[in-house]
Image (cartoon, rainbow, N blue to C red; front, side):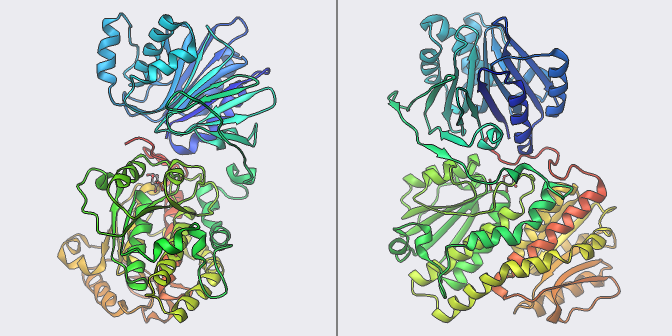
Length: 611
Ligand code: G6P
């Protein structure tokens, strides 16, 4: 989604701004812009629709340079994606603002500012911020004081960066509902919506909290909290390898991230397993006592993370014996929910900044849940900071918009949760836990075996290149795996793909099946296999073409109208993690064959920080 970068230094900062924007490109955007204070003390702006590369070449031509500046990649919410609506937005010629988020009362503010004589040049909600700030600056004379006053009138979500030619010694930042991080250098300082944008210039970061306002000067950073009190925010040293934003030997980030799965699954297990059981303390010091009280689990998430929650529901009910509901956050947050006594509220999110998931968590706090637990990939995210308990997935930065390694590590974390809840509740036999802990230890090797099937899957992908529609089938905990497979295919290949629980086929979707509609099925050798085989017969009888991913011992035959891909053997409970891998590879190869933008598919964003 939208990205912010800012810099104040004694050197020319345009290259830093542009590199930062490029590092945020993966989040999805439709235009980009920057504003820099030039040597004459004038604030100059460049904006372009399309990729950051367009902005970069415009910057080269304009030879724009300076020591203070802010930049932005935009993903349109209010106003079409075009240059006029791209950030930074100006008021007069000496004040510039970039903004992530949505200002909900922008219409009322716009009316009022127009009545006061301000002329608007864009259709964005953001432009009200810059004019409002301009008004306050004229009134109060100091940019920091003016920003503190202006944000009081804003309703909605924002991460803001502000520069002004009137006070060229500072960048101002304000955070409410949209993350911001200050990067600390030597005699220079930076600002971004994600530390990834600044990894080239520093490894020391200060995360702003909700309601914070920061004044960033070349050699100092001052922060005020929501109440207006001066506060110190902790400085965190970042250790993750800088290689994360590099594709290495792979053609796309998505392929690289698919192949990282054995390693990151291993990392997600590290330090969390004892010889024969899961270490409940991995969820926090109070987890053991808390989990023993849990009588119900409510999971809330979006997109791929929601599918992880759907798998976990089967696990938690079967292995931990606890009722579990799963819902997409955008529905949950607006629904009157009846909270069962002693319910654990679980959010799942790669980014930890998804607006709907965060809003659901905030609502849940007032709703009487026992506690909140975040399963998240970003330790410094809002979701983690606002939850009582956390289990971090160790997937490392995920750059491809279509989530892959984040999903499988979420499943591993959810299996750890299931086993911990099962033991804390006394519902899980010790030998079952021991067996599953052993299986978890073997999982990275199994995933490596599934990845070795890549050339086979690349061939299977040829069946899809010309197709317009596909059906994905699964039963039990493989149904959400089918959902995730369908989501991957539609996200990056733009082929219409739907997932159905196989038993539901005869109640509608069978009408669609013909030789033009491939049907993909995941079929581990579990107790539902015989029923699934009957469902497959229903497809074959209508001339449908089957692509089946199945255990070698499942007794499904390759042949007329059926392409069989034999999978390594795996314990039933862990099969959703393993069977996800070939579906990821399938989508990837289909997308490559169709020539789409695999890492940055059209219309999508990596992290959806607006509603
Ligand atoms: C976007 C991404 C998806 C992701 C979803 C939830 O739609 O494109 O890949 O699954 O957001 O994101 P989260 O960061 O909360 O897991």
